[in-house]
Amino acid sequence: MQQQQALSDHVARGELPGAVAAIARGDDLEVAIAGTRALRGGGAMTRDTIFRISSMTKPIVAAAALALVGDGTLPLDAPVERWLPELASRRVLRSPDGPLDDTAPARRAITVRDLLTYTAGFGMSWSAWTTPTPVVTAAEQRALGAFGPPHPQAPPPPDVWLRRFAELPLMVQPGERWQYHTSGELLGVVLARAATRPLDDVLRERILEPLGMRDTGFHVPAASLPRFATSYQVSPAGSLELYDDVGGDWAAPPAFPSGGGGLVSTLDDLLAFARMLVAGGRHAGTRVLPAALVADMTRDQLAPAQKLDGSLAPGFFAAHGWGYGVCVHTARDDAGWPAGTYGWDGGLGTSWRTDPATGTIAVLLTQAMAYPDTWPVYRQFWASAAPAPA
Image (cartoon, rainbow, N blue to C red; front, top):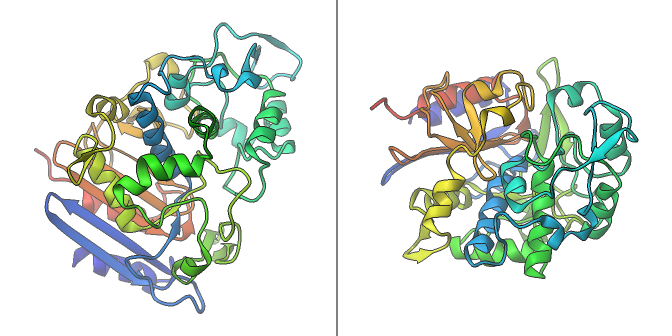
């Protein structure tokens, strides 16, 4: 009941319209539901409310990639130009903030492993977010969706998206540095081409159907829209402003299924995914992923030299690393979650963590975009959900 009261209190104070949360400790499951799906007229939140999970898409797409790695379709150290010839003979900026024509040849090809570890040589950074560089401006002009919150109806189809991306130089050499987001988009394109099927089909066949994740996908079907939460952003003054309505960007299939941030999902779908990882890749007696690849996915894959402070937010790598498409804690955080914890946040108001040592899984789903480290509902939830120290 602790979580239920806490969520109800946040809703009562007007911090968010509603939320759904769960904490699983072994066979014990605590579910809390509070508020409504919209500020006005959205109906009550329910356990099967559908949320935009934005960057929590990344680990699900990475898991699908590992399914293809496991069956030999997608070797980890294969150059991605095998499937993406547009990315052959890459050029690299001599300085990440330099002019687009000041480049050098890439020292090697981008590999599948680079995409999974987000070291492909292109992506978001804190400085680029606050002070756009020439390559950031060029990416935004091409509607690549590489920077900023997701708008799934904006980017072009995958072949066009990739052709436009290939017009740009990389920011840094492949394998040199962790950079956020764009590797997830490229990984989605690689999966579709390697499997010779659209990305949503690959996800459904390899991850979603085996786990019974029936409400997870790149759009919300018309019959499910009544369960879809309206999305808000939090203004600097703390008020909630509309970001995306029920009939907005996710009400129709996108031209570009975003492997970095395009999925919607529900509490129980995400719990099924998290439990599969805790079980070493098994679900209901069926192997979904090889156990060794799950272990690699959920441990830090980055060398110290690849962790540039400010790559995502100042101080991020003081207590974090990156596995395959998922954040891994390298030290106990302020909320009490220990080293070895893994999971990730979605910038539109969702979050998930797992402590594999105790099997503790926690998921928080809201529909209000805010910085997780400053938002009261996040801070309180993660502190109360943290596993007890061993």
